[in-house]
Length: 383
Ligand code: COD
Ligand code: ZN
Image (tube, rainbow, N blue to C red):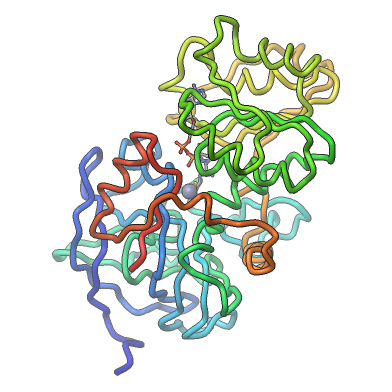
């Protein structure tokens, strides 16, 4: 019996209030309107940015269905949709690509005008939501909402991928992997034989390491205050790992000494200024200061909660360093996500080492507890 055109009742994790656990609910998912796509979610990862909504540092309208790193199968399409059809394997795109706006037409820009990361409307483009629970409308999250068995997205926020892709793995291409990998290969453009340093060895930082290694870096230094993260970082390509808490000096001074006047490329992949220790007051300034003064490039990947300001001595820039940043690894999502999936199928890189836990939607709160305790890299929930 076809579900197209009908309301689907299914299970979803709803966040009703900040700093409270998710509640597993039966929700009603309305059919897609024009230019929208309803997707059966097959696998979804837990990312730090979802947690930033729960703790209030990434402000979103409540109640909401979070989740933005996923893969699934198209269930039905609304009028006018041409790029996907029912049965296609797809990845939802939290950073969409409409291909019509000024940014999409720019050769490298990737913050499409249709993105909901900077606006946080909590709805689809048409202005309303497709989720209802206990008679209340539930908001969408950054064009995706994947902690649910079914979701509805705008056509510009979904892309078809290879039909043989393992969805429980390639879901990571929807956020964490691409954000880190692209920061190295596309934003920094790491060069063969270079020295790189990665601050923060979570799922995104480890993906930066995979990118640095594949670009041919000869020395990759991992920095983290949790030494339990070092073994995995080395497995993926870090040549050495250091803990700022083991040094009395600021970590940038340690790194400048270790690398004869600074590194070629540095990456800040922590985004948690609030929890940082005095040895590393701002890991962003540390990441910038440890770059070679004449040609070092520093890429900001992690976003601090509540948009705290960065104070930088202009001399650090005047001598030749470059400070840059990008979301989603600088990738144009509709163009690049299918290529990254093909790269996985061609065994160009492996996503398996990033997946430390496989779970189900019912255990979502335990999954978040593990992330907060620093015990997981990525938990993937399969439906
Ligand atoms: N010094 C060194 N390491 C530290 C410090 C410190 N002072 N504090 C924390 N760390 C380490 C932690 O031990 C941990 O290993 C690591 O930093 C952070 O890892 P996770 O697992 O918390 O986070 P990730 O790898 O999932 O990274 C998430 C980002 C920081 C990239 C993410 O939260 C973010 O800010 N994303 C960018 C914004 C964006 O693109 N958002 C859209 C959807 S994600
Ligand atoms: Zn994410």
